[in-house]
Image (cartoon, rainbow, N blue to C red; front, side, top):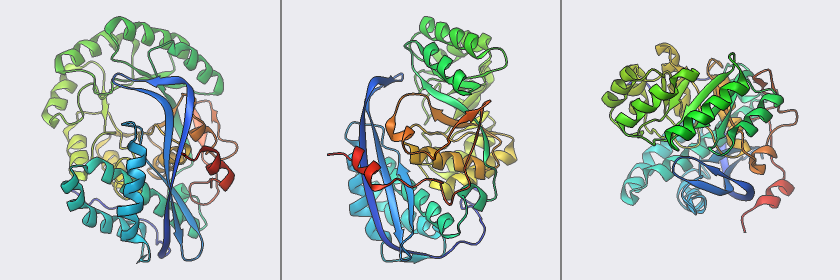
Length: 383
């Protein structure tokens, strides 16, 4: 396994005086569906870390599922993770990440909850990198030596009339969309054909099965959908299937594969990239690793000729973090932007956030480029 920690420009020292959880919730008029769940409200768990100098950094913990999962992760953050870091000094965010990894390993095993522990640590890691960049007075993408101009796609299009959302997104400036599949061959094929008609021959179309199929069904679906020329088919089988199964599916599928949002551990990412089974690798910065680990994944992907396309489907702080991650990695892949209505995303982005001819330009403000104010947090704070 190759080195898991990313090297960066010298970091300002971090002297952590406080870590606070902000649990937010917003109802949505139209539920968000994929092949195994329905979201009737949107949650966001924000992490605020505060330095002795009074500077704060912000991150977001993945908390979409199960119902009540956001509160559980907020408790883990405040009761388990924060006491590990508050009152301590670190030369850089990676040092704090190493401490969390070591200290949380046994508790996560004891609880049988490696996912929630990893997600909380990831959100804290993001906040620490944001803090460090703010202290350096640079946008995070720039401090990490990257680019602010990203190609992006509209994501999360469900099975019910996705053409309506796709048409709106094309009007807004998107040139690529990702369709949820796994709702039956007739529904999937009809939806994919509609979207190809909307985005045109030059648009990019991605597909996401959310781990819906077994191997045989995945091959059948890929062959049925290949005619509409999708760029990739994401998670057609379970994320924890052995790499050999992914390699076999890649051999049989006429559509390139993508995966990674539900992987944890540097070794697992390394193995999948080296296998040649996927065209795109998709770590989720709020699920595992934060910047410390995911930047290393980006470098491995670049060396192997694999697209680096970080996953995100949550609030605005996490979206900005994911986009800065792509920018820091050189912006050679694709950024994912949820197309569904979500005030916890829409109201937590910097002014002027817009897609123009398929591309988004990050701003030049320090860190992630946005700080939520007290009124905004109070408006959506979970009761």
